[in-house]
Length: 130
Image (cartoon, rainbow, N blue to C red):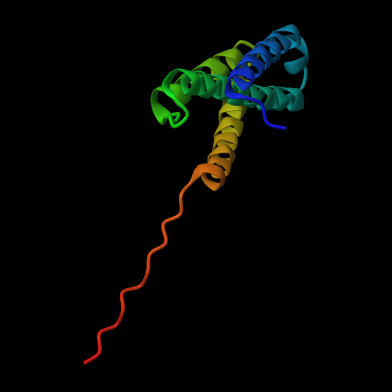
């Protein structure tokens, strides 16, 4: 079920606010055990992907459908925002959040290449007869 770019922007923005507030409300639970701390890093990577989606949709609305999210400044800003939120929970959440975010970014890039990428078919040059 696909939604429009504007609806996706609003949904991802609202979900990122919900995830951030959930991280702050359950800060003591995330710091209670090591496994919960790693899970907090995973949640911060989800926050990263939601922020990246909302920024990408906003730029698509403002600049047109063919605008692409670049490494700098968009992805870098999303990393900073998500890792700052993770750092307000626990220090280890920052490192695990960075690792999970890089992994998520790799898979999102692969999906994007499959969906929007173009394939260039090259034909082999014909052999000349002597």
